[in-house]
Image 1 (cartoon, helix red, strand yellow):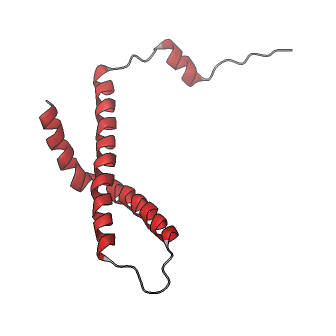
Image 2 (cartoon, helix red, strand yellow):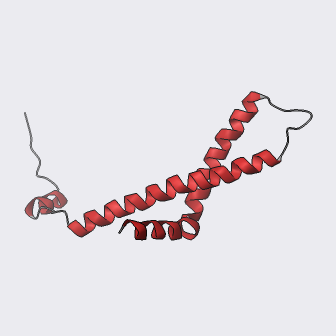
Length: 106
């Protein structure tokens, strides 16, 4: 016994008027994706280098140094910190860089 149920009203409305992708919306989505990728890559690169330089200024402690495992962990920690700092400061720090970069592309 097969019972077919009618589709929900939202699907019926979508079937009546199919959505045609707007070129402006597509360009905006591509620009937004480019902006996010630019913020991600540049932010992680810049802040990663800053954290790396900061780590070099601090020497190894005389006691209780974790060896190579601690060095690997701090590298991974710096990578995560660079990602988080990049996300938090993208609008203030990286957006002007993105605007200058897009002016050069036009």
